[in-house]
Amino acid sequence: MKQSLGLLEVSGLALAISCADVMAKAASITLVGLEKTNGSGWTVIKIIGDVASVQAAISTGVSFADQREGLVAHKVISRPGDGILSHSVTPEPEPTPDPIQVEPQEEMLANSTASEAPQNAELISCNLCLDPACTRQKGEPRSLCLHSGKRGKA
Image (cartoon, rainbow, N blue to C red; front, side, top):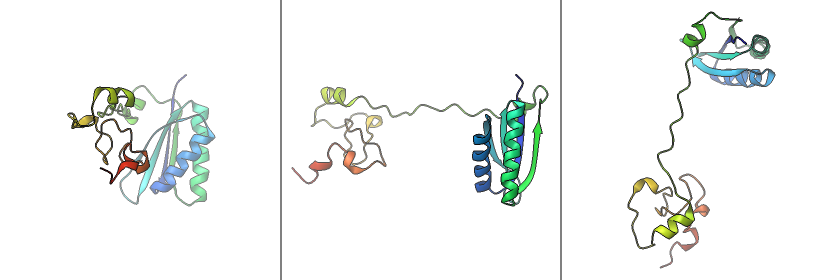
């Protein structure tokens, strides 16, 4: 089945995100992206999907944006020519794997002793105790640290 391209231009990023949410809930479409345009804080919402789904999603987004007085323009290209989708729709970059790899807690305790200083800084995930065996990640509650109840004790 051939894809269809839908474009909805609204005034403001918050309205664009709200419209994208309403459109995704209204029809089976794929949100390709939100793109800021030049001037006046306008944002273009790009969606793809089958023709009926894109038309339904765009009409829903148009009515939603019009109620909030932020509609600028809209367009549905039912069956774009070859190469149009590849030029207008930029592929999303592949997510890069996280360079920090933490071994399971039991293996780390078996492989290291408490008196050893961490040899590899990439294995440290807890910024409180700097223990590679600690499964707490930076930003998580302090109570998740392996050493949370042992602070201040010799």
